[in-house]
Length: 113
Length: 110
Image 1 (cartoon, rainbow over the protein chains, first blue to last red):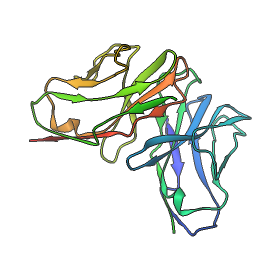
Image 2: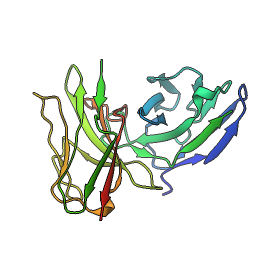
Image 3: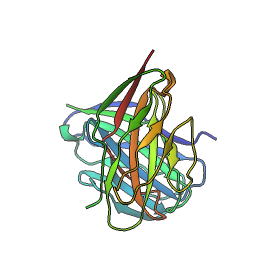
Image 4: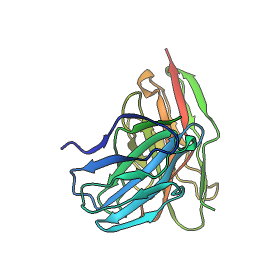
């Protein structure tokens, strides 16, 4: 199993550009989530999904959209990139919403200039 | 408000010394507490969780509801313990929705 995969690993965007960060898992996990990691702030939940077709907002959802058309994939879309979105983005999955261990992807380092 | 606080940004110890990484939380209800670790160039991974009451790589953590703390301890630090450590909490049985602390970087010197 590849576990949780993310693409791209690195990305540089200009202010106002849009892009999609890809996340996929091959463990048949119901629950997937996106976090951003910023220095001194730990990881903060952006959006999460408890199953295909169901998504909800986390702590810092503004400027991001998600969808969950399949169990495997959970892309994160930046609609109009801003410098404040410069961060490292992690996708994670867990077997169920009540699962006790999250499996994280390797992260995407995004810089917005 | 739900919050996790790790007061130390950086903790530096010598090999063989005891280690305690502090974690305090505020939560109304019955939380589940976790410690996640991120070694250099590796993914964030679960180290331990309070409900299992286990010792992983020599680390233990006890949930103290009176002091709302979940400190991570190891009696003798090893160089390979150097990493970023995150304390996190979730609502009971919602381990997929985590609230993280700011993280503590542990540096173990030879």
